[in-house]
Image 1 (tube, rainbow, N blue to C red):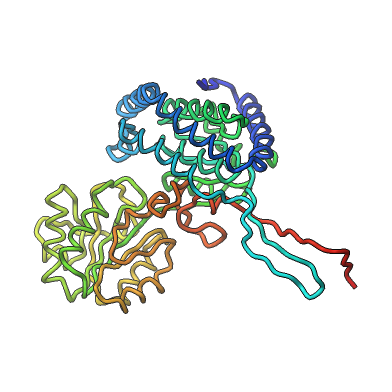
Image 2: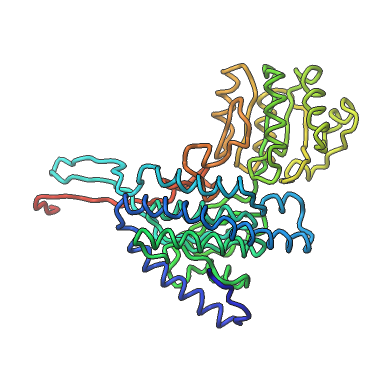
Length: 429
């Protein structure tokens, strides 16, 4: 098992990280050329070793959770940190699902021939070395490592300090699977220290070793990465997700979806944070939906009309409309139609995930076309904002930018491409 590098001092951390980068770069060259069956075999072995090491991983996680409780971590944070036998099995199953995905490397994305006889192909290639900086969730360790390996990339993982023991145990299991398949175990490496200086060094690119950074965590982490990174970043700052209950929404469906979107897991980035209710259905839909939520312990922060209509709600502040609670709290506003709902989302949203509930296909298609978010849904819970639910076999995160990767970042989004041009002696006049 990896051991934490302790009390290294700035020069010690620098040396450890640059060594890590050099090893990752060498491993990236190997994995980029690895045959698809070899990568698949490695991933299946990784899943098997995660299961075999289950007791060790859960014991390490229990120590992390106990330490988190001593440090006063919030309930939602502890939920993201905690592993159970079921979550451990889901982690191993996700690695197997990634293993069985089509190999993304070498795909011909486009091909054409010019009048001079030159034949062009645009072919998918790995990005190289991907640095993943994340907080709390130890399952990201397995998801990120597996996705990088499947897409022919090496990974440098910097997990949260709170999940250090869990991530260490998981990476040890993954490395055993990689070695069993005959690949370089350095294709997945965990930063062996909790020293925050390691993050700063990753953001510099480690002398060109890191090609892309993917942050996955809270607003302060992502903001720091976006501000300081000297390499490209795939990221989203917040998941301020909305559901708009349209005038033609089915009440029974709306009640079920809203409860699921808010309370299935409050600490995930796809949890809905603001509910917009069309004025046309306030009398029929508002109270039943909010009663369902409040009956399950959800605090409702509403606009003046909501507070007047529904007892037990509290007044929302301006800040509430742009807050990612990650808790059992929901902002609720009454809107005058589709245009006002879209305007609210554009003003306060984070371009992550937004949904409309309606039986009117014209309204639904207008919402899907005009809401500029990475994921837009019709009659479905925002908690489907997950790469596994998209059939991607997991994700490193959700990207809300508009360059290259957008939405769940899976194996195809972890690829670049090059142009391969074949000639028969042509020269340019």
